[in-house]
Image 1: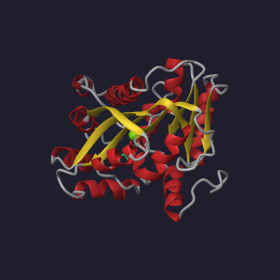
Image 2: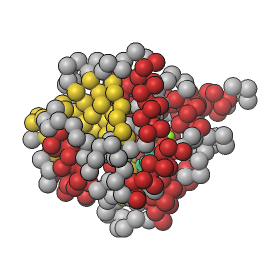
Image 3: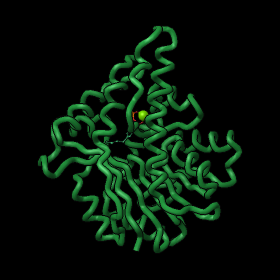
Image 4: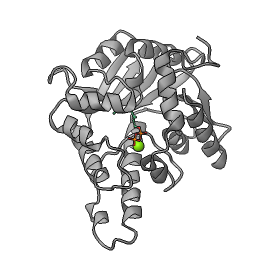
Length: 282
Ligand code: GPP
Ligand code: MG
């Protein structure tokens, strides 16, 4: 597998095409608030009063509020990375436009590698790092998270923020275990389908079709971590914390992408769960 051509299958190339073309206002306008461009959802209690009050400025108020909830999600993930020193290297697998990577460098001052199979995202993220003057420590690369070519044992922490549903978990965790040093930390925030519900519900299947992804069952995460020297230390069910984000997002016509009702239905019927899983590399 060559790093110069990171999308190695027809499937991966179709995913790269999606992200190379993607310009959703819900991502770009939220990112414009403070220059942290996220590709994940929000958690926490929204301030519903932003929808009230004068119509003038309402859209900006909701954008700022949704962005605050998405940043809260990234900060929550970041809190689970464990001790990170400025000399440490961390890896953002499926970095999107770079928001989580830049935030992690802001908080810890560490070296961050972000990787994506979308060259548009990698270029965008590197421009953001340059704008902030952190390109010496935060670098984005066109790479496949299943075969990065990065050094073995070089990373203190690795995370996937809503990007595991694009890959086979067994291959992913084997590569993460290789790159993490012993005692390092792996964290994911992910949407998974609930084994206790059964197989994927219609709403889960609609989410898969919308993003061209393959949402895994909850059980696969633990099975594949256990098989790859990743031992869970914390599991947080964020389902109830993310529903209000979707309820607010669904109320803003200029931001909706059409997938909001499927998320709300999937979370509310119990077929889909939003989880943080943190694991130690042993
Ligand atoms: C959000 O990206 C994340 C994904 C597309 C991966 C799928 C996630 C699941 C939990 C199933 P985004 O911020 O680009 O999405 P949107 O454009 O809808 O805001
Ligand atoms: Mg988004």
